[in-house]
Length: 489
Ligand code: BLG
Image 1 (cartoon, rainbow, N blue to C red):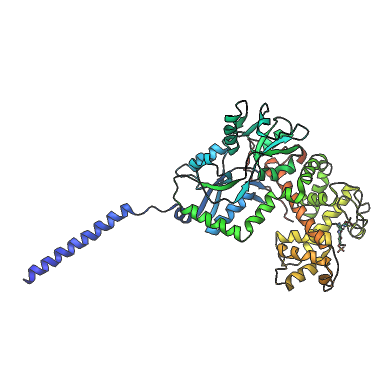
Image 2 (cartoon, helix red, strand yellow):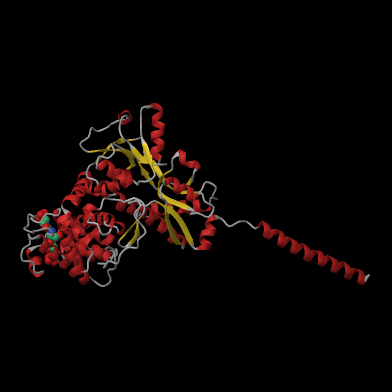
C-alpha cells in the first residue's frame, strides 16, 4: 500500500509541476500587451508630433517654445517622462506619422476636432475654442458672407478643417474656387494676404490673434461658422490609456489656471494690444525698427542684455520715436528721466543712440542690483518694473506681497500688489508712498508681449536677416538649427 501511495504522490506531483510549467508558458504567450501609457512610461519618452508655427511650436533664442509645446511639455513633466518633439511638413504628413505603428503617440498641433478628422484620429477633451475666420486685405472690399467668396483667389492649408469647410460650402456655391497648399504654413497664408498675392484665406481666430502683430494689412472679413474646439489627437486605433491621462491633465491645468495663463501669453496679443495696437506694432516693426536695430544690438552687447528686450522697452516707451516726451518731462526713445540720463552719462536724451545706450546700461544695472533671491525669468520682469517705477517702490510692493502671504519673489504675486501703491489705504503704510503701480503692471505686460513677438520674428532660422527684411517664414529653410548662444539678461 505504502509504495503504491508514494508512486501516486510522485505522479500527482509530476503532473502538478508539468501543469504549472505549461500554465506559465501558456500564460506568457497571452500576457496582456502594455497599454500606450505604460509603454510611454516604460520608455521614459513621450513622442509628440506638431507643426512649426508661432501658434504651436518654434525655436526662439532660449530654445523650444510655443503654446502647444509648453502645454505638452507640462504634460510630459507630469508623467515624469522626457518630451520628444517632431514636426510634420503639413497636416497630411502629421496624420500619417500619427498612424504609423512606431510613430509619435500624440499630435499637439492646434487641431480642430472636426467630424472629417474623426476617422483619422481620436481626440482628447477640448482645450481651446477657436473660430474659423475669413481674412482679407485692408483697403479691399470687405467680404461679409459666404457668397462674397465667389470669384476670389483663396488659398488654405491642405488637409485643414478650413479646406473641409470650403468643400462643404461649394455644394451650395458651385462657382466657389479655392486652392489648398501643403507647402505653406498659416504665417505664409497671412503674409500672402498682407502682400496681396492672394485675396483671402481662412485661419483660426487663435492663429490670427497670434499673428496680427506681424501683418499690418490683414483684417477679419467674417467668421466662417461657429466656434470649434481644438484637441490633441491620437491614432484612431490606440487604446484609451493615454487619452484618459491627457484628459485628466487638461482638466487639471484648466482648474489650476495654468492653461489660461498660457492662452493669455500666446493668444492674448490682440486682447492686450487691441487690434489697432497689434497692426500698428506690425507697421512699426517694418517702418521704424530698422532705423534703431543696430543701436539696440550695440547697447545689448555692451551691457549683456538681450537686444529684443531693449527693443521691446523702446517700443513701449516711445513707439520707437526718439523725440518722445512725457507730460512729466521724461524724454527720448527709452524715456529716461533727467536723473537717470545723468547717472548713465547720457548728454542728449533725444539722440536715439545715446538714449538706447543709457537704457541698456540702466536695465543691466537694475537687473544685477536686484535681491539675490529673485530668479529668472521673474528677475527680468522685476527689472522691467523697476525701470519704470524705481527700485524703492518695487521694494514696497514686494513687502505688501509678503504681508498678504503672497510670494514676494514671484512676479505674478507682486504685480497684484503694485496697483495698491496708488491707493491711500495701502501706500500710506509703505515706506516710499504713492506710485502709479497699475501703470507698471501694464508696462511689464506690454513689454513681455512685444518681446515674445520679437523673439518669434528673430528666431534662429531667420538669423542673419534684419527683422524688416526677414519675411516671416521661409519654407524649406533648415528649422532645426540650435539656438545661438545669447547672453541671458
Ligand atoms: C523711471 C526712471 C527710474 C525712476 C522711476 O521713473 O522713469 N527710469 C528711467 O529713467 C529709465 O529711474 O526710478 S528712481 O530713479 O528710482 O526714482 C521713478 O521715478 C520712465 C519712468 C517714468 C515713466 N517712464 C521709464 O519707464 C514716465 O515717463 N512717466 C510719465 C507718464 S505721463 O506721461 O506723465 O503720463
